[in-house]
Length: 361
Image 1 (cartoon, rainbow, N blue to C red):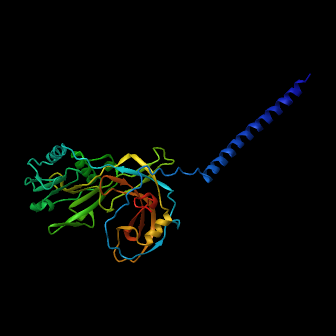
Image 2: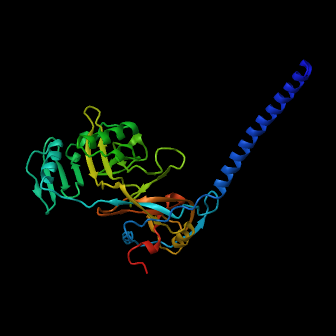
Image 3: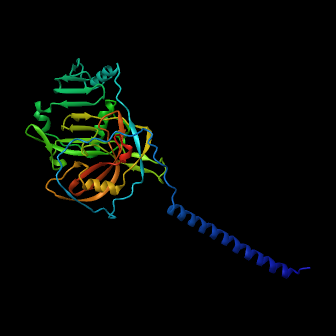
């Protein structure tokens, strides 16, 4: 029969070895988890193949342009063209659908801007409203697209610009969005997307860019579509892609504001050219590689969205994957490569692989 001393001895040994076993188990679990994470990172599962669910896509068509001859050099942060994966989403841009109520809806929009008279029919789908008081103004609307141009002739009262101070950035953006909301045209993405300000001044009877807010009488606010988000709400695996208009400086909505010192803000010009996108209707399509895109840029295949004057050599500082804002409805929101370089140079190149386009051999 074990003595009390022997029992205590074996108990201490059992506790010691048990503690060692527990610590060893914890260490092994940690090592296993680290190795598993490393293995998954080093050997990720292959991405699913492109669905090409919409069939072959119509190629992106850019406006014709005379291109200066540039010599390009690659000077990105890591010295590479980057890796953007083998596929990307493509989204449906629904067709425009006119209706018998389109003129009634547009007439209600005109009344919100104080146009009470009957419109002039410019074409089958385009109507123009006019007023002379309190300032001459016109409103032109396409019933099919609901795109509009609003213009106020502030020149008939030059005193309006004699004592003004252009609005600060926050106030100007809020005023522009409030104007669209008043017209029931402020979409969710225009409400949260990027806003760009341009300060303007009077030169004769024209409005030209001002060097600073202090010398400006007007401010132009351009509102852009919010980014395309892929991957859900969680930060891990979530990606955002810019939606680039054909003209990088021209928003889907553009508003010019004048703030006389003794009266409320006057909207003197407004343009709305928003096209809805069905983000709930998407498919994946194969992409060309970024290296292939770089070679196509060098061969002159890209569209030059912003071209600096006087340069013959362009250092490309950044390459990204984005989307081209649709030029017309009834098509698809397609990915593009964006090349950014010296003095604001920016070029667009279609990113969908040739074999997934209509007319592919």
